[in-house]
Length: 243
Image (cartoon, rainbow, N blue to C red; front, side, top):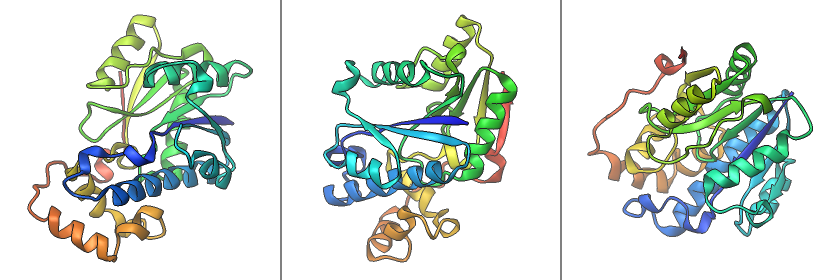
């Protein structure tokens, strides 16, 4: 069995880099839909024993309750900044057991149960740190580790390289795992275009219900039509890269 930790920003202020594409209420709706998709996958996975949401959003408690998760406030973790919050939360969660912990962002609308299974299988085989990188190979969307292999957290610019380097310095076995369901997070307009092209495969998801065959989705699709296809996303991403 394993645990999952999902840090979640205040949804009112979420996804500010999409301000040119979505209104504030639409950005909040998208952030919540994606978070619910992540929580749905985690709550449905037979190997996830406990989900912990870390958030100061006013609705976080109700969101956690809906998916059988618990909710910790940022204040309760006595930390400032994402990396310190995740460090303190991870220490608390791993204090009483040897089961692995997954730390993942709440904006992974294409995440699947199979992605979580692949991560857990890889972590158990490696007995170290699994890094689920973003589709560009620079950011970190997921980490999996146990108490003996907890990394120094480096979320921020070029965090994938940062997590790799810190693991090497600490002598922690590390592996990068690339999967389309983990790789596609949503921060900017090209990311929205990427998920819009994939939502027909996830028609039951909350994100699909918001954007697929809806008035909002049609408007967003029209606005995104001039953007280039900067990254190909598909099954070719679903591979592990050892390091």
